[in-house]
Length: 419
Image (cartoon, rainbow, N blue to C red; front, side):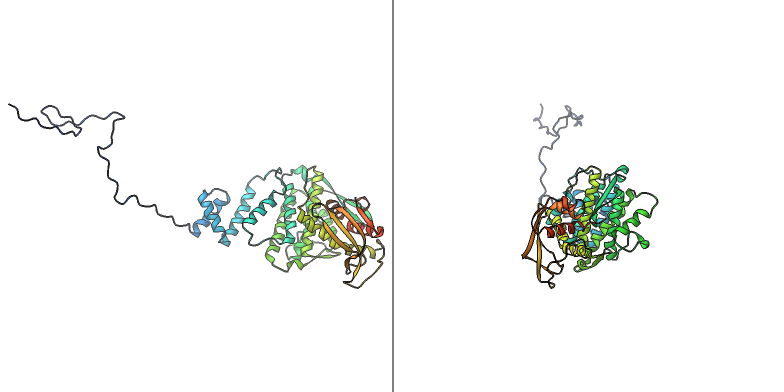
C-alpha cells in the first residue's frame, strides 16, 4: 500500500521518477529569463549626480590653443569665452593665437560684401562694448584700410604689377604719375609713416628717411630699390596700420591734438587720421578701377567726416592760393573772429550736409548774413574734386551768386590734392 503523494516543488529542475533532481539544458533564445518576482527598489532611490567643479585657470589657459583652432567642445568653448571676459592676460594670449591661426588658413574670397566686416563689428560691439574702443576719428582709417586689404587679399602676381595712374591737381594743371598696384601700397605705407613718427613709432623708411612731405618720401621709396615693388609690401603696410590704430586706442584723451608734420603744413592727429582714411579710399578706388573690380564708397558717417575735413581746410587753401597769386584778392578783410564774406557749400547724397566757408581770411567767422554765393555738389563728386581726379571746371555744380568766389573755392578744393 503506498503512502500519500508528495508535492513536487516547482523549482525548474527535472527530477526523474524516484531519482534526484537534474540540471536542465540551456534555454532557447526568447525564453523568459526574468526572475519570478520583481527585485525590490532601493529604499532611498538613485543618488543625484555630483555638480562638476568649474575648470581652473590653468586648465582654461591650456585650452586656448584648441579654442583658437575651433577644436574645443561646445562646453569647453563656452567656458573659455566666459573666462576671456574676466582675464586680461588670457584675452591677449587668445588674440595672438587667433592672429597666428589666421596665417595658417587660406584667405577668403572677395565675394563677401565690402561692408560685412563693419556690420559684424557693429553687431558684436552692440552686444558687448569694447573695453578699449577705437577713437571715433580713427574709425574711418581702420575701416578703409581693412576694405583695401580685403581687395588686395586675392591678388596674384599679375594684379600686383597692374599699371595704375595716380592723378592730382597742382598749379592750375593736372598732374599724374604712373606706378603699379604694389607701388600705390608703397606710397600709402610711406605717407602713413608720417603719422607713425608723430606717435613715436618706427619710420617705415628707416633712419635714411628724407626730410619733407609725402612726395619726397614716396619718390625715395620708389627709387631706393633697383627692383620693382612687389606684393611683399602688403604685410608691412597692413601691420603699420594695425599698430597705428592700436596705439591711438590705448593713448587716451588728448592724443588727437598731437601735430603731424606733412612738410609744408601740419594737421592735428585726429584730422591726419581722417586725411589718411580719405587717401586710402581714393587710392583703393584707383586700384579697383585698374583691375576692373567694383568698389563701394565709404559709409555715410565716414564720408561725412572726410567731407567735413575738406570743408574745414578750404579757407586755408584759398588763402594759400591768394598768396601765390592764383586767386582773386580779398575784398573785405576783418578782424579774427569777426563775420566776413561767406560761400555756402551744400553737399548732397550720402555723407552730405551744409558748410559755410570764409572767403577772405581763414580767421574770419563764416556768416549766413554775409553769404555772397552758394554751391551745390554731389558728395562723391566733391571728393573726386578734392582728390584731383576731376578738373574744377568739369564738376557738375549748382551755383548762384558771386562767380569769382565760386571759381576760387572750386580751385581751392582741387588744390587739396597731391601725390
